[in-house]
Amino acid sequence: MHRRCRRLAVAAVLAATALAGGPAQAAVDLTEEEFRLYCGYLDALEQPAVAKLKGKARDKKVAAMAKVKLPTLLGAVEKGGRAGSTCDEIGKKVEGDAKAAVEGALPGRVVVFNFDDSDPAHVVAQVTWLGVDKKKVLDEASLLAVTLASEAKITKTIAIRAVDPGAADKLADEAMWWEGKITRPNAARIDKAKIGDYALTRYVRLFDGCKTNVGADYCVAK
Image 1 (cartoon, rainbow, N blue to C red):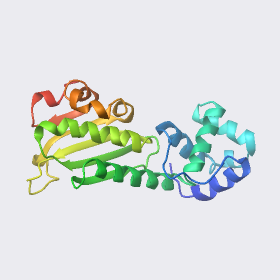
Image 2: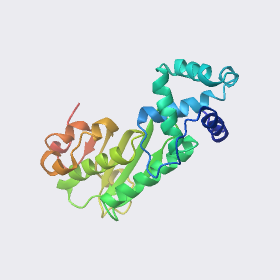
Image 3: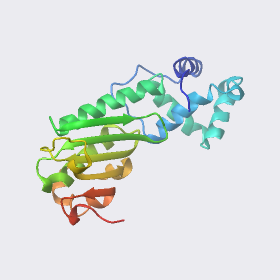
Image 4: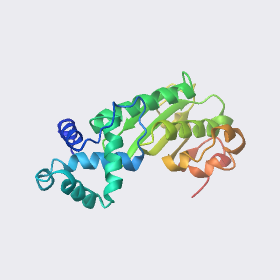
């Protein structure tokens, strides 16, 4: 949905409902569902049928449209308002935090980082990194996945790709060592302290759409 007027809309509503209890937080602690509800709420405010309503009547209508209970909607709106006055603002904060986190996890080896929050219902984070040891690609994939699960909780899908550091074109298909996708809830199941023990035996099963030229053990058919 289009978000051209969100800044004014949320400012007016948060002031009217007194939902904003403090300044924006440094880190964004919104879940995927809360982000979706918050952005949907701001979009709904632009609809004539909602704009003519006020207070609880307006919020109840939006909750019904979103098919959630009113307290659930209001909780998401309150948290969203504290994180940023627009979804674009929140997305940029999360993108900045996530990019810094993955670059910190594998210093000097992240060659692509994309963060797409254009659809609040399906936010996608994409990372391509330089492999060092083919036998470590799943360890590093697991590390990046759990890092993004922690730092970008509004994300629905995490897509990660390890490439040959010696490839002339590191974005070419033939440069790929390993790639896969994982949902944020599955990524959050990864225990960073146990990656060395479980990457090949357990965490590999959390990834979908896996492709690799490393070895059959590094992907699980689904």
